[in-house]
Length: 188
Image (cartoon, rainbow, N blue to C red; front, side, top):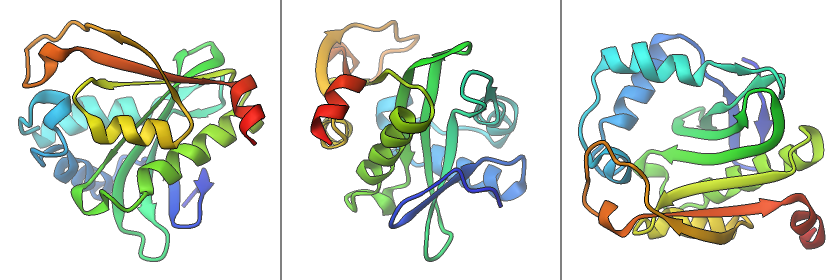
């Protein structure tokens, strides 16, 4: 297994087109609480995971010479916890990347999202040529916003996105947080 990044408690590795990764993603995306701020908690089919989700997670980004999504596993047990996103907004430039995470409920409240996010940010600024990290969530998603803040990102703006189908809380809009290299360097 190729390891992209390790932290004290996490291993981040590339996804593979395997039954195990499909099963993990299927379980993750079928937890209504995990998906509450993504699609209102609606279930996802296994076919959708295989046809749409997994190909997106397997995409290589030439400007980073790597992928943009990483399977997160608990280091001591190898248990699948979810995934992290650290993906360039422009496939041809590593300057601006989007940070994201989706972890199963059993992993919530244990600091995994912050730990993985900080490690990706550090790797981005030290090894990948990143100049700005951005992250978005629904304004009402206080847990995700707290992770962004603990990872070092600062509130940038509120905005209203185009939701194909309104979900509870979408009427309050979305928020964007960011961190630029100069601010990251000052905090080190």
